[in-house]
Length: 482
Ligand SMILES: Nc1nc2c(ncn2[C@@H]2O[C@H](COP(=O)(O)OP(=O)(O)OP(=O)(O)O)[C@@H](O)[C@H]2O)c(=O)[nH]1
Ligand SMILES: [Mg+2]
Image 1 (tube, protein in one colour):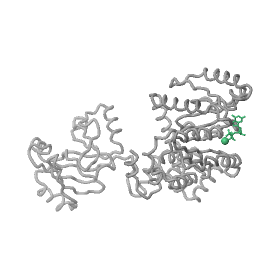
Image 2 (image 1 turned 180 degrees about the horizontal axis):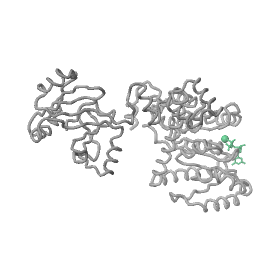
Image 3 (image 1 turned 90 degrees about the vertical axis):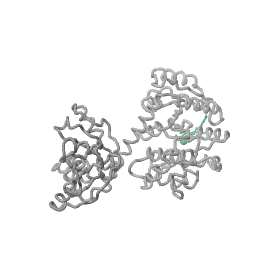
Image 4 (image 1 turned 60 degrees about the vertical axis):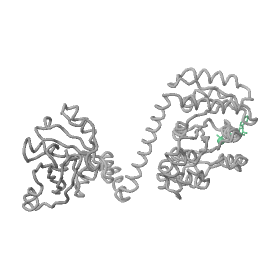
């Protein structure tokens, strides 16, 4: 699996190096991802098929609960069983505050001399997209590089962090005794995302009470997957409870894998992720490239002075980027092209008894250019293509009597055989025709000549004309014969 993947990614690229587990490539990739660089997409594209093997564990909880200490202990535990461990410590605060991170770095030094462990602190540097995206992409890099367990530590505050832990395979919430009163407050944020709970600093007084309150709080909600989050007592400083914690993590990971609900949850996460990326990408396109800074400033000024309403302003911004159907049409016309939502006549198919003979009119008489004559063998037809404006006339000559065009000629004689319209989305068009009760020859798009997606509509539904529909941008424009 691994080998076949590495060979499909271009050797020498950073993505390829990541897939071979190259440590420097991993570090460099994460830096680029963190900086929100343009190479992020290329890296992720190159490694994505190689991800999904490692287990990502999100560890969250209030400041000072002992998350980092537990991460250290868990990492050592996994190392002892020969697993490679990646650690990402997320600091949502300013990259310049860095106190806790620095502390973590120094403390984790003992681990960081081990080549089987990769440790990295994550901070926001790029202005768009932010921490969640950078962290989730960095997890993907570690995953692709062959890290078996990826531990992501976050202080459970803010939407970014919720997004990060939600994207993990397993979420561990770390609490400490004496927080009982805070459970209600915490609950709204991280309580419902915990797949398991550690009560760390369990040597302290109040651990029983804490556990009781936590249990009571957990019992109030039923998870859709039927999992009952276990509570594990740990003392990170004394390395106590770590085995039970690791065992509970594996147990949940296995449970999750076997759950149909996990698939649904995963689809939901992916959808959420795509929305986020789309939002970022749109912002980048519209604000970054499409609108000159002066124009943008002018728009902002107009709205501030109430000369322009915000909706029109946003419409204007989208128009700059060539977006939204109506505006795209306008933009397209400006550029001398047709809008993407328009239907267009792709070609007219005319059945003729002899191309040679017919060219006397279409080419010699009318002055159209004969671009090519193509043999579409499986449809038993020779096709002469004569461009006309943005569409073309296709002269169809049968190669035998028992061919669609041959039968048409025998039955009706030479003449207009079919009309071919180009549509944006063939499946959607077929759906709406179906709903309108129109008789279709092809209920589903199929591959026509030249690789184009095509479907035919029965003449009964169109007032007597055989109608071919083809999806814009598919195939190389060859006729579908018919
Ligand atoms: N008594 C006791 N102290 C602990 C235990 N685990 C961690 N600590 C201490 O608690 C303090 C905070 O531990 P960290 O592991 O840095 O906690 P954290 O949750 O990562 O903290 P932040 O990342 O700053 O939110 C440190 O002084 C640890 O030594 C424990 O089980 N018992
Ligand atoms: Mg920490």
